[in-house]
Length: 181
Image 1 (tube, rainbow, N blue to C red):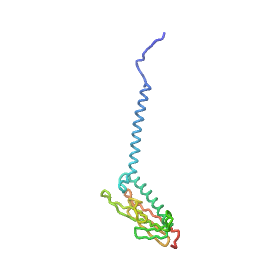
Image 2: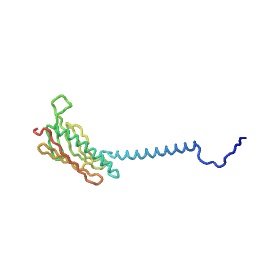
Image 3: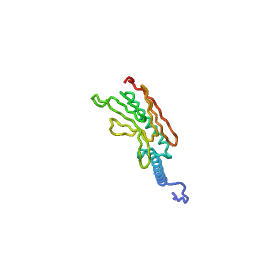
Image 4: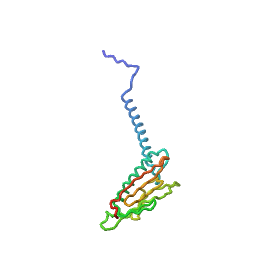
């Protein structure tokens, strides 16, 4: 005869209880991960209003500054190496290059200079680029000083910036390909 006995002391969990618990924990972990990822993303967005924000996000600000300086050096190298004429005036350089975009024999004038901006009461300096005197574009933000020196066919650019309370100096030199002009 088959006997049906009920076990009075249940041990363990049912499959439904385990599934619901794992689901709730997965949801909470997803929210925690999304929040941490969002905070990291916000740290990278400290370039609000055209200035590098100081504070605990200084490592991110330093990485952004280094990236901007590297891009500026690459851009300036292309212009200087193929320049027809280079004029240096303290913290301003004017480069005349052959305009490859148009079919005419016109030249483009690219100018890099140090400008001071006041945004939300904070004063910041930035290196700006203008082409043919039209529209300025900020190339490097948070710069303290910008120096350009030119000898016969060598152009040396130095950028001084303060990030996280430390002064950093970035310096590079470029040779003009055609020194006779």
